[in-house]
Amino acid sequence: MRLLVIDTALGACTAAVFEDGRPLAERFEPMTKGHQERLGGLARDVVAEAGGGFNALDRIGVTVGPGSFTGLRVGLAFAQGLGAALDRPVVGISALDGLAASLDADDAPVAALIDARRGQVYAKFFIDGAAVGPDEALSLDEASRRIAVLGPEVRLVGSGAAVLAEAFPDLKYATLDARVAPSPQALARLVAAADPAEYPPRPLYLRAPDATPPSRLPGQPRQPAP
Image (cartoon, rainbow, N blue to C red):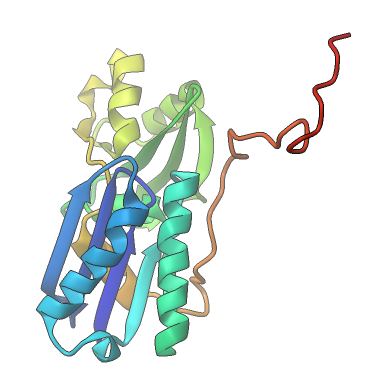
């Protein structure tokens, strides 16, 4: 099976082609914005390097969040458009699942954490490689309590790992991996194993957007102060 994996939900722009678990071409560029300008070129480059063109793809995978509202929509729109044009299934993968899968396989419990700002992290917890709950938006206090329950062997991964470690020095016992985004290899494994019917490419929003609708229409006069 040949896969194209795409990730724009967090702090990088990723496009990579894998075939039966073997990487054929990869691009991973750390960035917090500008995904829209880079994604098309990266996807074109990895498909050209892999050979066979876009028609050689069997499946497309894309991260669906949680993460940047703008970033994840860029990846989703691109993946869905490409899937429709090629008539290929598109698989949606949680960015937190991708982060957890990016760690070297072992039996240690894992807390995948993304800095959500405003005193929160997006979090998901894993024991023996299996999730023990859904993707959640948690306060730093609640996240630290949940991590403590996992025990001293817990591994923290993602941009929220350093945030938690700084806020709670008692977590210094945990192993930290503050990577900004999932690895392409981890995403490829998850996409290959997923049933497209059970992992649709739908955005995973855990919090309302910070943006607010305008209070007046263009050309409409401002309301006088009360």
